[in-house]
Length: 423
Image 1: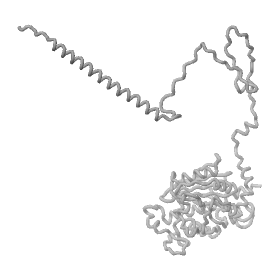
Image 2: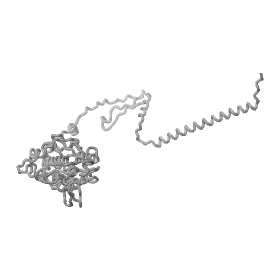
Image 3: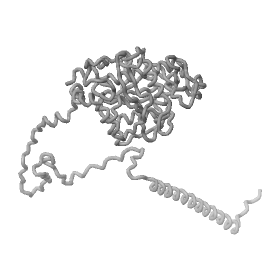
Image 4: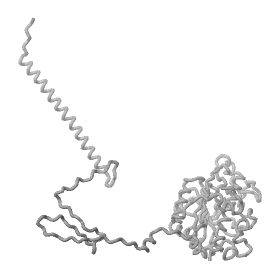
């Protein structure tokens, strides 16, 4: 066997040098890695602080409450709260030191609270006396009704015009006005030339009302655009103002005030949604703006029941709500004022159904156009009545016209019974 070779001095130096380099390399790598992590942490913190918005509640839990004060500290003990102190004084008594002279503390009794009955009764919600409220409006309503061609100064005046009877005995002569409001497309179902309505839905409806009532209800067959900001609304005294459209709109403060005053004096608003169904732009806007006109909590939209006078005690006997455009059959809604309808809202786009013009005394669509004709069925709607304008049929439109006549008769006669009893 060979004897083990002895390690030379040079080899020992080389091994120690490798060991030194290895240690040095580990130190350098360690420092590099720790520096990277450190800078990342600082950068993240700076980013967080720069992105923080004062007042942001954040998504974490609330911080823990501060630790309780040391028992060695002197805590002021209030003997009377600010509500009980006279002359707005507050007594704070610190814990006395052992050598301090005794300080008498008054024994203050909390006063027994008293209730001001006048304040309590004023703050409590009051039940509205609707009869008294209507009686206060009665004279204004009678004055408003003078513009409706009903005759007389009160219900059942025996003037031979059926005033106070309602239904098919209703006799009236009035003008129809459509709300001309900013932003929206209030004239969407009308053709307007030189600022005047030439033809369209309301003209067809008014012709139908006159024909089906056998001339008892006569309306100016050319409706007039009405600027809601004008005071002429109180000179004209229309029985209702017609609203329709597709778009969102916002009434001005003057328009809101005029409409509120008009409703209080006995007028009415008939809104028809030009985009059938709920949730359309007009539907949202009309509900919102009517809430501005009538902000009282007891004046909310509600669905009219099937036994409402519009269906049962008007001109035509209707079995509920007729389907409108595209067969929408949403309930008719209303807002009452003193138990009388002030706002009626039809959601089924009857405005477009009224664009069908019938030949006189028939339910045959009149499709023949001429420059001087006031009644004509739009050809572009008729040719697509099975595709885009479903239910735009003679039968469907006739049912819509019957409903329109019923609504108008009810708005003309809704006060008759109450005026018989009003002073």
